[in-house]
Length: 131
Image 1 (spheres, helix red, strand yellow):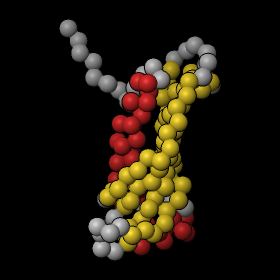
Image 2 (cartoon, rainbow, N blue to C red; image 1 turned 90 degrees about the vertical axis):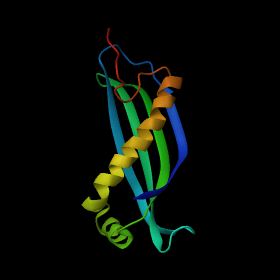
Image 3 (cartoon, rainbow, N blue to C red; image 1 turned 180 degrees about the horizontal axis):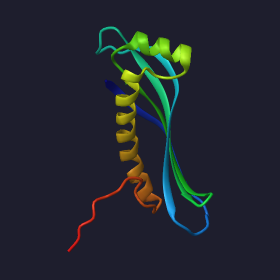
Image 4 (tube, rainbow, N blue to C red; image 1 turned 120 degrees about the vertical axis):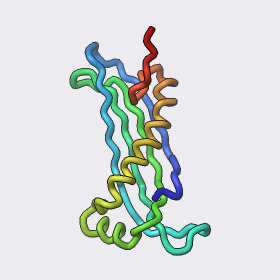
């Protein structure tokens, strides 16, 4: 489970892209995993560095992008997680799915505000009220 989450870098930009149907693409990446300790938790946790990119694309042209970089602290299966990362540069399946779901949730909630500032559509569907 995630016991800490920090955004260390935010970058957003708009480009002069051509007209066409706008698509939103997500690209989360785990960039490194290392052992860490936290005073509030007995034992070690995994410090997982990540980047999360949201691209707005029209055709083959990038219309805008939002990039977040940071790290999270994961408590649970730390030794297995570290060993799998060292050997395969990936996360164990029992960690990958819940971690990525939380990463999407946290990063996309941050990206919504950035998209609004850049006058872009939100990177997630928003409810629509109909008469």
